[in-house]
Amino acid sequence: MKGGGKVSYLTVPIQIVKDAVLEYRIVGPSDTEPTPEEGYLIDPEFLEIEGVEGKFWTEYRIIES
Image 1: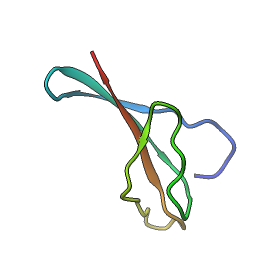
Image 2: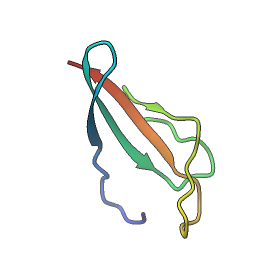
Image 3: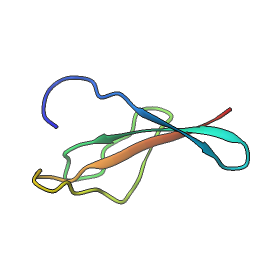
């Protein structure tokens, strides 16, 4: 996951109380929890990807329809 290109968000339809969309992307590597883009949250549980050094984080938001 190296390079200078912008990473796009993945979108997944979900239903909580009403229809919504989960928009997320994996960010990193970073040893510390990164600052999310405005309107997004960072999951405090980091990810480790086999064969790749560093910690990765899920940045997400839920958009209600």
